[in-house]
Length: 460
Ligand code: C2O
Ligand code: CU
Ligand code: CU
Image 1 (cartoon, helix red, strand yellow):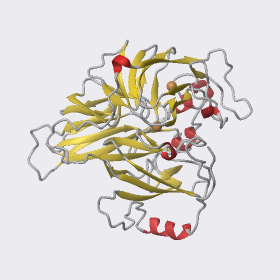
Image 2 (cartoon, helix red, strand yellow; image 1 turned 45 degrees about the horizontal axis):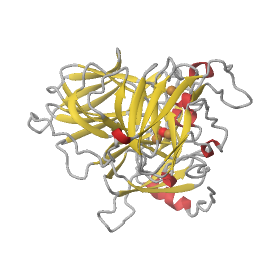
Image 3 (tube, protein in one colour; image 1 turned 120 degrees about the horizontal axis):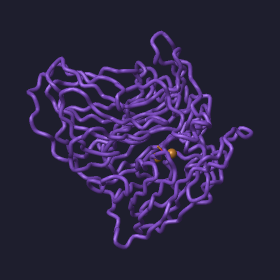
Image 4 (cartoon, protein in one colour; image 1 turned 45 degrees about the vertical axis):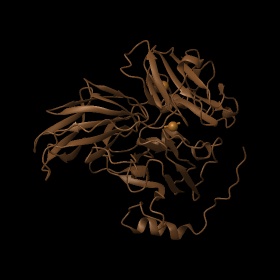
C-alpha cells in the first residue's frame, strides 16, 4: 500500500483558534444541516501540563484539554468524523479500540496510514456499528504516547434510549511518575519481560484518588475503562451498594451481579449498573485492596430508582458457525533465551506468537501475516498462553466470541475485542472473518506488544 502526504496542513491556524477559542472545549458542531449526520469533532493532540501530584507539574500529552482526553460520543449506526490535528513534537496516529471499521481508519502506521507528522492533520471518518464503551489511542511509540496521557474514551450511544437515566465514565490509568510528578521510564526491559512496566500513581479521569459525585438512590450506568498501559485492575467495590454487570468491552451481556471482583485488563471496559446509597454515603472503588477513588452519593431531585433497566440491546455482530468453523492455534510464548537489553535503539525481543516476534522498528512486519482468513468464513482461535504472565489479547477490526476456557467458567459466551488470557490458560474464541484487511492481533500490555507480542491477521 502506498501513501501520499496530501493531507498537509493548510490554513490550520484558523482552525486551531476556533477549536481552542471556546474555553478549551474541543467539541463543537461543524454546522452540518442533516440532524442524522452524527457528531463532528476537532481533536488536537498537544503537550499539556497536568497536576497529578499536588504542587507539581507533569508534562503530559493530551487529546484536547485533559488527560485522558476529550470524551467523544456518537450514536450507533452514525458516522463519527474527527479531524485529528497533531500538535505534538512527534509523529502519531489514532486507533479506535474495539470499533469495527474499515482498515484505512484503523490508525495503524504503515498498514492503515502514514504516521501523522507534527503540524499535520488527518480526517478520520467511519460509521460505528456497535453501541458501548470504547476508547482511542495512538498506535505509534505506544509506551511513551499512551504513557504520557494520549488515551481517551469513545462512547457509542444506543440507537434507542436505554433504561438508564444517569451515567458516568470512569477512565482508569496509572501514571509513570515520581513523587514530584516527573515521568519515569514507560518501559523497562526487565519489567517488559515480566508483567510489564507498571505506573506508580493511580488515577480516575486523570485525578489521583478522585471523588466522583453520583445521584443518591439512583441507578447509574458506570462505564469503567482501563486505559492503562500495563495494569490489570482487580475491580471491587466497598460500601452499601448493589451492582449488576451489563456489558463487557462494549458488548451487552445478560445482566448479572458484579461478584467479588472483576479483572479488567489493559484496554478492557465494563458497564455496571450501580444503585447508589442514600445521600452522604460513599462507595470505594478498589483495585484489590487499594482504593482508586470514591463514589459519593449526593442529593438527587428524583425519586429513588427501584427497577433495574432491562438488558442492553445486542450489537449486530455476526454469529460464528462454531460447528463448522476452522480451528487455528495461536501460542503465546516467552522467549527466555534472549538476553534482555536494548540493542542499538531496538527494543528487546521477549515474546512470540507462533514462534514469531513482532519488531516494532520493522515497517514490513504486517506484510507477513501469521494467518490468512477467508472473508465470510467462521474460525475458532485456540489461544494458548505458554507463559507465566497474563496477556489481554486484542484483535483489531472484528469482535470475537469467547466460548471456552480451561481455567475459568464462561458464564455465557460473549463478544469482545480483548480477552484477558490468564497464566497457562487455553481459551477458545470464535468469529466470522467479515472485515477484509490486515488486522493487528496483540497483547495490550504495551511493553509486551512492543517487545514481540503482536502479529497481523489478514482477511481476504
Ligand atoms: Cu487498543 Cu492495537 O489497540
Ligand atoms: Cu484496537
Ligand atoms: Cu502480554
